[in-house]
Length: 210
Ligand code: 13P
Image 1 (cartoon, rainbow, N blue to C red):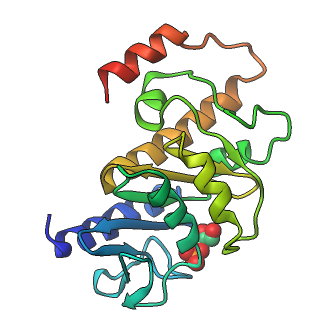
Image 2 (image 1 turned 90 degrees about the vertical axis):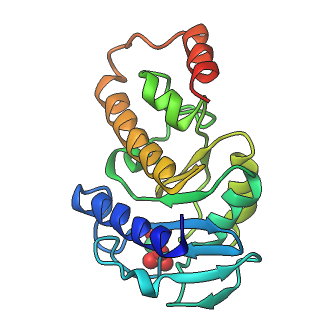
C-alpha cells in the first residue's frame, strides 16, 4: 500500500468508526506504522472529519516531523508498538461498552472479558488486561501499557477506554469493533452465568486463526 493509500484508509476507517458511534466528539486516536515512521491522528481532531494531508507524521523514534500536532497519546501508541513487534496499527477509543467495563471495580483486572464468542478470541486474543488509570496524555502510562501489552494485543485503560493493536490498520479497527461488541455481551450477560468457550475451544481458535 502506498502512503497516500494508507492515509486515505486511515481517514475512511476513522470516519466509519465515528459514523457508527464508536467515537464521539474528539475522543480516540489512531496510528499506523510506515516503513520509516508512523502516521497518527492530530490532537483534538474528530475521527469523523480527518484530512489525509494533515495527519501528523512521526519518525521512527516517534518524533513529530510533519503535519498537524499529534495526538497527546503518542506515548500510548509507542507503548503498544514497542511491546508488540507485529503491530502495524493502534486504535484507541472511548467506545461506551468497553469503557463501561473499564469502570467496573469488581472484574478480573488480568482479563475482565471472558471468552464468550469466537470472534473476540480471534481478533482480540486470549486476554486483555486492565491498566490502572492515568490522566489522558500522561507519559507515565507508557511503561504500564508496555508491560501489559507484551502479553496482550489489546489493553483496557481503567476509567478511560481500550487500546487495540493489529497487524494492519483494518485488523486493529476490526479488533476494536469486536472488543466493543464483546464488552456489550459481557455487560448483558455477566449476572446470568453465561456458557463460556472452553480452554480447548479457545486454543483451537487461536491455532486455526493466527
Ligand atoms: P487526542 O485528541 O490528543 O488524540 O486525545 C483524545 C483521546 O482520546 C485522549 O485519550
